[in-house]
Length: 194
Image (cartoon, rainbow, N blue to C red):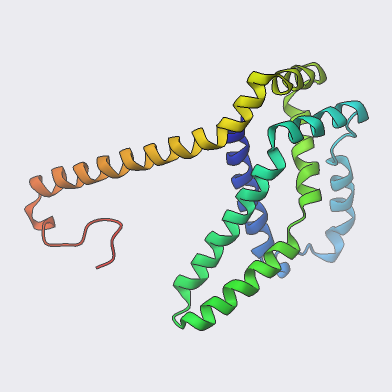
């Protein structure tokens, strides 16, 4: 469950960052198109979630640590963006200052409350009230609590194992390719800078 939430969180963070970095001028609608867009926006607004179901969803998110997991994913995404700045800016001092400024603005623009509401909407969309109650029962049980506690470690270990296997497979594939194509032997390996 936490691994799925982490994937959703990374997808949503990437979406929000992509949307927030789109120039405002390209997002603006022509003046005569404002009225139809407002009406379409109102029609597309999500339906109000039943208060009891919303409370159950928020309890489930608390039991599973969904918001903590999401906040961790948001923080990691912010760090990845600062690493990108550091590769683009040659001067290390300037890169560090820009990275710090980016993180400060990134955190100011990110709304945990808005994200919490979005997660509630997603749970509401994918699970019935009865299913949410069933998940609450499971995650409230000793086994469910152990599952919620172990999933981050299990996910990290699975990711590390997958990375190791992927690196080994890439190395072996590169060796096979070089054996069949001797002219590749002198060049840099994929993923490495010359």
